[in-house]
Length: 254
Image (tube, rainbow, N blue to C red; front, side, top):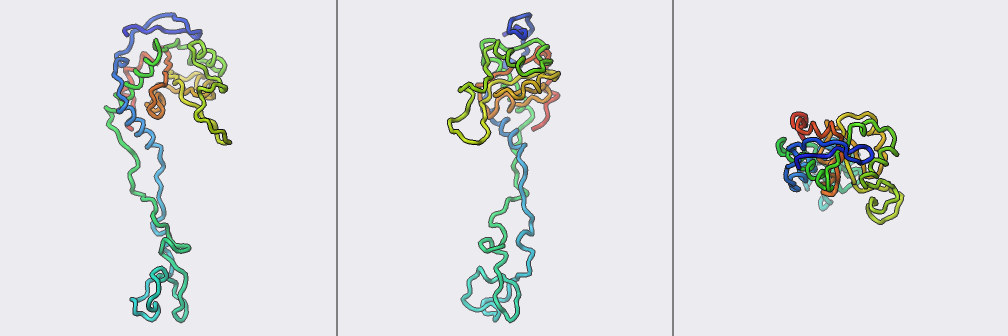
């Protein structure tokens, strides 16, 4: 694949450009899945609880088993109690199974939730995803730079229909699952449009079901292949496909 045809907005070939060397990267699904996992864990919000939750109380352990305040053969669940007059047993505290007690197994603040990935591996995974999504069609989908300036959703939809990509919300292919409920209906990933500069297309295509739009500096493996799926298609502008080789220095660590 030494030459790539550049398509017009109507889907007709207008010129040819040299194919970047990154398109010859082999498809490595295991590496792509690692990169997607690393991206997903970066979005997790660490959970933690107050270290003294349930412990700020006047209830204390009083004496041993033979202490007069405790009494013999009294269950362990009522040993930590409030100090009341004349040794009366108060409320249970500091025990997870008790009312107003602390949580049994709270989240650990120091728990490591982020799955790291080597920078070189992530770059290789990104190039592998780019090559795979461009090869999922009979020919790579590279359009002229005019697509970056599309400002209406129907113009983007018309462009996609010229290459036989249906974005209709009535399409049964896009619907995930068969359950009908009041939850928000989600659609399967269909294509990702990558542009070098946003001149209106990101806002124009954001409501098209199954279509993701991003600029080249914000491109990630998860946007090309959400969940590591290999059925996605990537659509590129001419200026974006020419700068694939310069992405290595712009990719942030994951």
